[in-house]
Image (cartoon, rainbow, N blue to C red):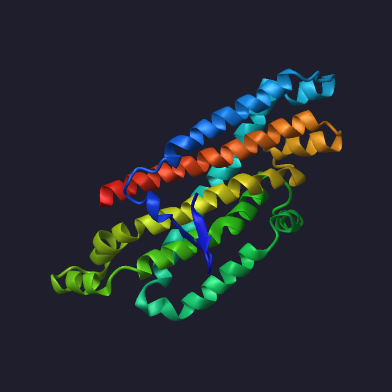
Length: 258
């Protein structure tokens, strides 16, 4: 799994760069076996009418769809906002504002997600999915921004000078030299943002934005451990699958660049 280095930079383990990583096979197996064990356990339990209604397949699918919607929209917004901003502050003319911007991003990410969601609900945004999406964007913004800046910053200056020497403009150098070389590091940041959003989206239930958190919170309030177990297992499986899909993208990029 992608790790966070000091400074909030997501790094990819060396073993997953280029050569085949066994975890690419192990993760889906773990997810399938884990869910099978949970479902097998639940099949031995006698569910009361409350649990049967809460865990009806259509209800679970609806909550899962809401969860995926929150996660997907917030991640797309983070990519659309954070990557261009990271490119902008990595330019020589704006390097002076970079430390302040990264410090502000770190402060925003340090805010507790639960408190942030509740606080935003009492702004003009109100309750509901738009507020949850804004909170998710704030919570996962820093890894993408930081990794974009770091990825562009680690490009060898000699390559940039060489490209300018053969007549490339600054824009062409960015598009053809800097961005392709920075993509693996940038992808690691997006991967961290995706996993963060899977977990944080469970808190959206507290402002009426739906998601799998609805089942977890409802079953906890009604003291129904079986329902809580299934919803928690689905969230964990979703986080593992999202991380696995992102690792496949990183692996493909590494193979293409090697």
